[in-house]
Image (tube, rainbow, N blue to C red):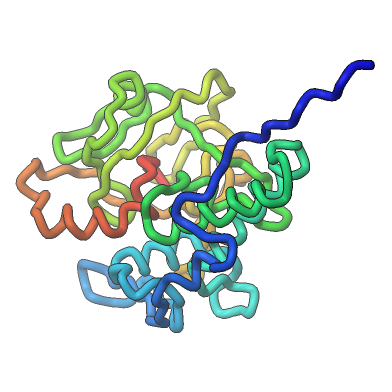
Length: 274
């Protein structure tokens, strides 16, 4: 009589967490206001009050979390307002997929996977890239976990524009780049293979070459907006414009690097051209 093969799971064991303590209960939390101002005139570009984050998080990290990664319409009850909600949305979804597809040998291993991942994210020891935070666990949104641009797409760095393909082939982890919020750095690179590429023509005379699943910021008339797949754009849609100029390595100060290190978990995905 043939014996059924032993299920081994993926080997997840607890390292940072304990079964009797939720990882959030080991963190001191506080509520604070997230606010981003225009550097030119000081006006408020984004604001969300009463945001819940770990006390040790910098204000910069809080602003990036609230402005970039909270889902739901600002000012409505559906709007996310806590880091816990964002982490739970993503991790619980991924854990559910793992249970459904048989990745865990039992319930205990699934719980260990979930708890360990939540600990890593909350303590900024690891991070997903932006499309994961934008899409995973959001109802009615394609569960797209990656985005892409063609090899030649320029990335703004302190030393000038560099093709994104060069950064991938050179494994340029640690390279300093600019995103919509300022200076950050690349923490991982990946080639996503061959995909059809769209060319978006703008009224300003500029073009943007991206894959259809690449997220771009579609602005609305009231100063807000949302990230949408490029394939969903229609003639007349408005895109936000961000600086692309570079002023040399002298702009990178030790203070800026220290601040980015704290906030990096939520803005160091290396994606640009939002």
